[in-house]
Amino acid sequence: MREEDCIALLRRAGCSEGVIAHCRAVRDLALTYASDGLVDRDLVAAGALLHDIGRGATHEIRHAEVGGALCRSFGLDEAIVAIVERHIGGGLTADECSLLGLLPRDCMPQTLEEKIVAHADNLVKGTRVIVMEERMMHAIALPRRQRKRICRLGLEMELFR
Image 1 (cartoon, rainbow, N blue to C red):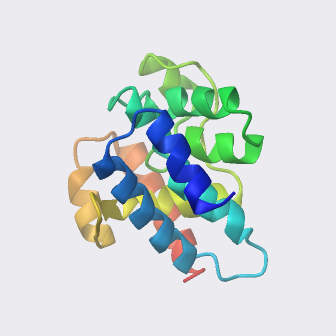
Image 2 (cartoon, rainbow, N blue to C red):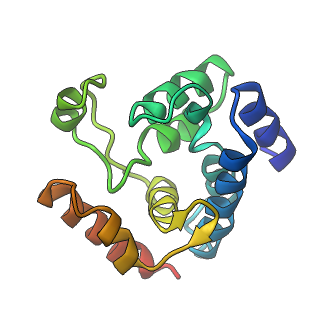
């Protein structure tokens, strides 16, 4: 998917220019992790650009679920939908989703592309790239298992940089 097409979908979904700028910054960082031949760079770029498409409707945690539904309604590939739905922190289990009032389904990033986008999003605050230590300071209120998951994802993804 071309960048222009992704940006048009973000605008169609009601995303602000700030959200679009964040998505571009996440895309730029994500591509630095996508140099390995095993990674689909086009999928990483499109998924990163669209990861927050649900923020056109809500800025709550359910933006990932809303974004996935939007992507499906736009007829996008399920690989992009999965990136959008699984980009929260280090991922959410079905039980965690249920406890948060989301559909009870596994939203753990599984593919390299999903993991790269989730990790890049963890390291972009607004449009500013932050270090893992700062990310963990922002995550201090999260349950311990979710903080550990964010750390493990970061360690795994740093191998691709």
